[in-house]
Image (cartoon, rainbow, N blue to C red; front, side, top):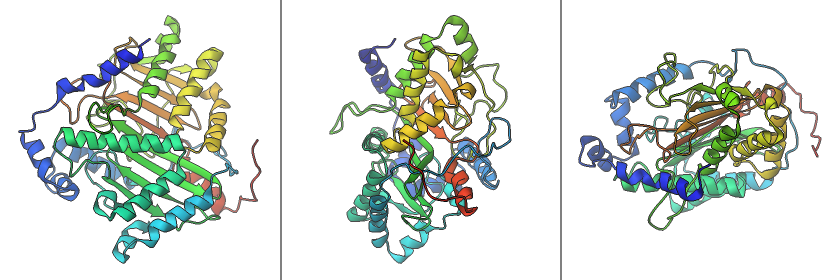
Length: 428
């Protein structure tokens, strides 16, 4: 198993892949702001591969929301309205502090209907592909601080710390590649869906490069799904935030689980031996998402179950699955997190763990944990801004989906709109 020292060395090896900043790509991004950078893609179709992916994304966006499934059929009655102890009064107050500072023009872009399809128009590249809401690096310090206070009031303390670390790492990358106008600590958009309320459904989106959070709130219940968190590199090795790193626990726990399996179990879990395997069908790997399947605009993707059943694993191995899910549910306040981990464990008989790549201490890899109520992915990527042509441990993408229409609180909203809510019962 990889030691902390070995892990640190692998993650800090990014320095050998710093790009040539004299190339046209990096000269252009150095002078452009977020809107000018987006214009390169949307009007000039550069880079062509990403523009092609964007066109495909927009076609997917035209589909009505159905939800991620394993076979194309949404399973009903998987999610329930309940009291999760979320401090809704404090969250609503923080949201209203933001709204009170909006100009009329800002409010028009920021206060959308709870049923707006724009819930789904987030994306994780640095290109500002959907310009809605307020952008934190383009507003007053007071409004920016209010937006961050909303995030802090909503997430768990450890979840908020993780989000801030992702934002700081994004800033660090912007400095590394001379792109601070596009990638910085505050290059993120905030948009509301529905008016903040203690007794009615509403939510907000917070999105930008390598950090995208979709938050739904109803009374004292919260859904943070889908979300995407990435880092390139995933560690800051100099400056005021030196030592900041994220996603290393998701990496460590996934590898520990895979290495704990017997040879026969590993063979069952591993669906492809190579990170870009000749046996992969067309579309299983693409330039942007690489191995992960449920990123931006993939709201209706059919993802068949693969790998080994978690219920067939030992109690210690199942505890590792719980530990992985705990990391992926870290954004949630602790009571909500505990309930959702319990929900996940109840479905271990239908939960699959699958793997792509090697499982040695230095091997890059992909894994997925998938059940009717949760889907999480982890992927080591090749360079986007850094120059590593092959996947490396310092560039990581992670994401979470709630299958069967659980994303964006959609399954709960249908119950609310159908008059199912008859009051909460505290789940002890």
